[in-house]
Length: 103
Image 1 (spheres, helix red, strand yellow):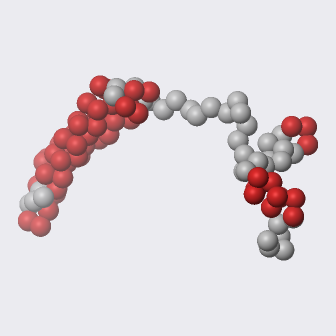
Image 2 (cartoon, helix red, strand yellow):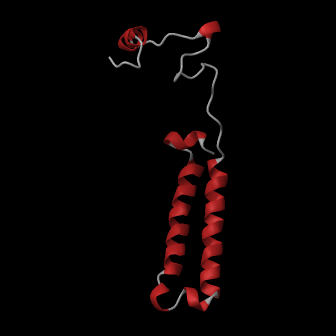
Image 3 (cartoon, helix red, strand yellow):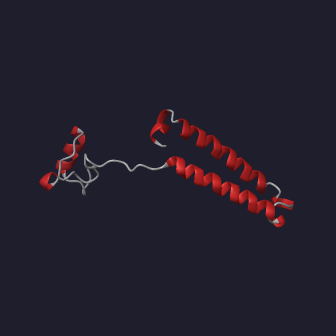
């Protein structure tokens, strides 16, 4: 037990329950029961990422200074990003496992 923690809070933590505050408010660190996670459109996010890799590839190929000399690997990085993003897109689109709720 520390000096900052009151004894009642230690007893509640040991029991696995946290006391609620006044008027039924949840205790600090506890979420209300009616709080739900936000729906995130993962398929749209993956598609935007794929488009960004395509734009990066086009820019890299159009500007010679970005794909010559020591930077010859830059276009391949864009290709790899696009291919890995395509795998992610297929996984989310298929909707198996945890990805079922993502699309």
